[in-house]
Image (cartoon, rainbow, N blue to C red; front, side, top):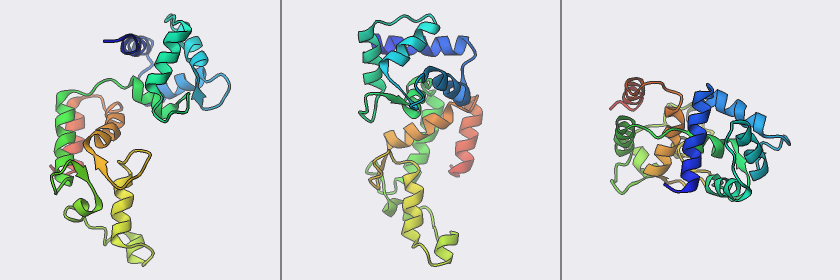
Length: 189
């Protein structure tokens, strides 16, 4: 485990010990750290906020943490990047049910879900916009697929993107049993 990973683990433990858990309380914590109201944290704001929790980082460590968590290359951390970094790892049971749902969608078995894969699993004919003639069925399937796609929206969803989407949802479900039941029901597994 490198220094950045160790910092993430310490921050996660600190947040949990202070009752900062779940998406809402982490979002409140983020807003409190966002001193300039930019809806993003720079290394200085992150460092100051972590110091309030008793986690003293030098400037280089704070920069390293920001760099590791900054997925869009902006040089700052937005709320989604902050939440993603602090989410606890998922259990094997959760990962397994997510993989089963992905496998159901990935009809071609190539590790990527596309509109062609969805056509074999779901129908968008009953969607109101298809019924009105505003959209084609493929438009509905693409919109559905975009839910799980990364910010690039390339029309292809990988298992990693699917897991990332459900990682966020997983953080708000208390037990493995509840999460597995929800996934099993939603994806008719």
